[in-house]
Length: 410
Ligand code: PMP
Image 1 (cartoon, rainbow, N blue to C red):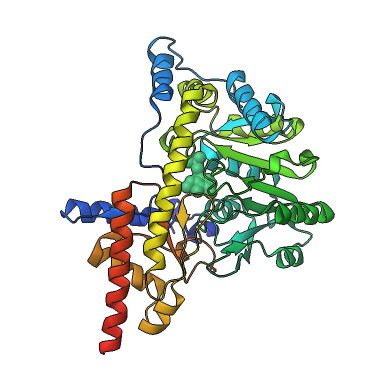
Image 2: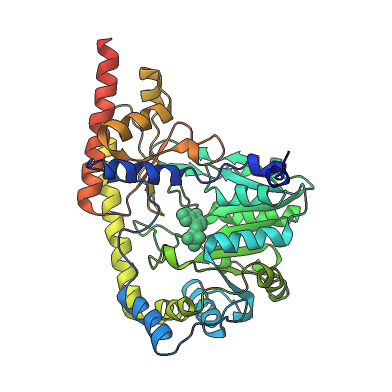
């Protein structure tokens, strides 16, 4: 075999991020003039707020802030992040414990690369955002999945603490906690989080926290950040980022918070991989964190998404054969369609393909979120406008109704 084709074995086992394929499909349908409604995207429907953009422009055109920066980020952004976490969550983070990264994905990968030896395991509650298991596989580690507990349409998903504890082995390094959770929209209760941290402590394993959706919590539900827990330095590697809160997905800015001596070591990895995060973007991110008008914008956005969630939920609840749970965080609804599958004999993927191709509604089959527990579910994003969610919900209801009727007629 030619040497350029001799890749590491693990590379052919990567699943990538299934959602991206549907973006290509949406583009193709649009180019063919179809009236596409896209509820598959995990990013806000509005651009970054103006003051943040203005700050980046100023950093470029006036300050000519175009060079490399310190590897863990300029002190201003590290201080602004520490202050934000401390004020918001009553945490005690020092700015030297913050490492700024290219996106939260960069933060996750950096954390994994610092700790995983070949064959080490991470416990991934599933269905999961793919970056944790995929990053682990790239590094030669092993994702071990534990299904979230489906507690029915009124309660949604929760952590299966018993199963998580049973799954810990001598190779386990991390338990992943994404809260609020993508793709289920679950918000884990302070009690279950406290119990989980007890388990982690007892077994000497770490928690890898991803709280990227912490500004999208609805119905005044109680959100507990793991960074607020006493003694976090012993067992927590915390990640978050700017993509969702400030609609900055394309800026690629995230961060890791970890005890000081480890933060220093993370920089030693990062300096050889990406050198530093984007320079002018860091200045803009400081503005995002410190400008009260930007925070008002965030609050308004979150409130609007809370309303969109309700609009979409009502449509889904009226759909026969569909069990919808009113999510309490992130910006996803993840209804279960098992009954539709049973009545039509179709799989979730077949149902989604039918809807995409005939109703031009782009949604994601739960199976694209590793590993298997999402298979009878569909993910809808409601990070968009009223017209889209209400039209999308209606098309979904029509599509499912028509599938069920055709089945009965046969
Ligand atoms: N974590 C979760 C749970 C996400 O949903 C996403 C984005 N879809 C990310 C991390 C990645 O965010 P970023 O753009 O900061 O890399």
